[in-house]
Amino acid sequence: MAILGVDDFKAKLRGGGARPNLFKATINFPAYAGGDVEVTSFLCEAAQLPGSTITPIIVPFRGRQLKMSGDRTFEAWTPTIINDTDFVIRDSMERWMNGMNAHSANTGLTNVVDYEADLLVEQLDKDGSTIKTYNFRGCFPTAVSPIDLSYASESEIERFTVEFQVQYWESNTTS
Image 1 (cartoon, helix red, strand yellow):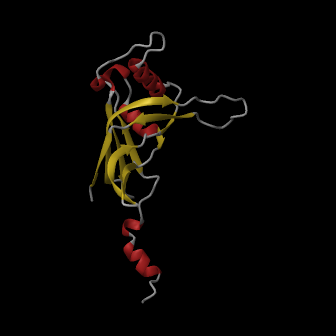
Image 2 (cartoon, rainbow, N blue to C red):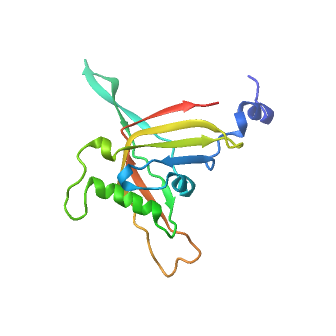
Image 3 (cartoon, one colour):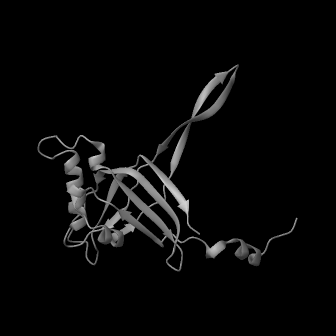
């Protein structure tokens, strides 16, 4: 068996490897929430490529445990957002959630289509082109994290996370 060298490894690692800092996240907002899609794409500091799980169904048979494919579940998607002094993104997220369940009345939109939106994450190549796209379908926020305030936090910019529930996602490779 041949020992593969560094040159063999480099030849197999296409494009020098995908870089976790080369991405673009697009958060679309329902009309009632407002929101600036372009600003949100720039200020989305961190995100994840999605995961999903197929839970096995265990079927006992004559002393054995047969594992069969069960239902697929999709994990929540949680981007990190840089806060600006306009609070434009945070305000939009708060309006979005308030439309689903108002702070004061425990009422909200009843038609799912009115509060769900599609979200997009693009993995970029070093030349800025999109090499992989994930489209998160039927999403809505369920948690906006607090922003800690402190006199000891000098030379920092505020950040917060938003947890989105995802109905399902689709992906495609563009290169």
